[in-house]
Length: 474
Image (cartoon, rainbow, N blue to C red; front, top):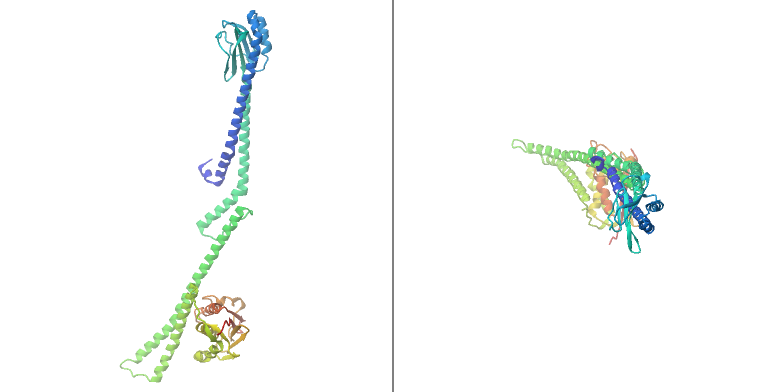
């Protein structure tokens, strides 16, 4: 297996399978085979030793009477054990007296002489086991018995074990191959697909990629989680792009909105400076006042723009604070005609009030006045030339305020979007403003525990309704 293959999970799993299964199983089989072979060897030694003991008992007479024929017949009878290759009797001088040799196992010659004083001894060689035992009768030694047995059966058994181990190893390798194929299909292929998606995400940054889900197991959960994370990143990227676009649009609109009054103020200042030159006659007081009157309007416009920006900053930072006190909503509304007199005249609108008794609650008067001003200013902007109707009332523990215009109206699909910051449903080229008025209005209303809704159709004007809890008015 190559180094690259070992770095993969598939290669590592195969190596782990081999180490965890083949090695202990193979070691166990080898140990079991060795123990069995050792036991068989010991059994062979025991059988040969017993046979030698039997021959020892019946050979004393043959040696004593020096009858080699009888000794050979005795060796032939007792040496019928399959493993026996040969046997021999030696006289007291150690000289060969009688022999038996199995022809089928002819090989090494039987020793011609042995040590006449040799004691019982067993020797184990790779191809044979030999036993030397003295022939003793009534404590008198008549010679020595020699027996040689073959270890062919032990070698055959060992070879069988080797073949068995080979078969087992081959079977395990085949099993591991099948396991590898199954793992690749069930586990490693989904994991490889997840890895491929992750690499492509890191390389290309294409967050539209998704990992396929093949099952409901841990890998399926991992695929779902990865897809959810990628979808969230994609969503946030989209929001970031929209936020950047909104920021760019806002900066463009804000620069235009701030530039317009500043340009007007600059032109007025230049004109007055020219009129106040030493070689010029001073203008009449009435003319000068008429020339300065736009200053107030443009300064108020700048003040409103800056206030909106500050309010948005406070809202975003969570620092919008209310200072509630006892307020009569009817009183605030009754001041609208005088406050918006110039704007009503300029827009060609009339303001119609409809109130029913005092509506008293605990609200922040400054912020509530800001809500009224934003809604009326919005009605003047989009409902120019038509009447504006403002009504105030109370329904149980809640007060309500309604501002209706008869202007261009709002499409149903756009009625929620108009309350978002920097959003507008018409071109900023035809209608000025930063697109913050309704956003700030909703935040102020909700900060009081109330809600604002709109009902409108395109070309039929719009009706904004504010509902506020009265609180404890004491």
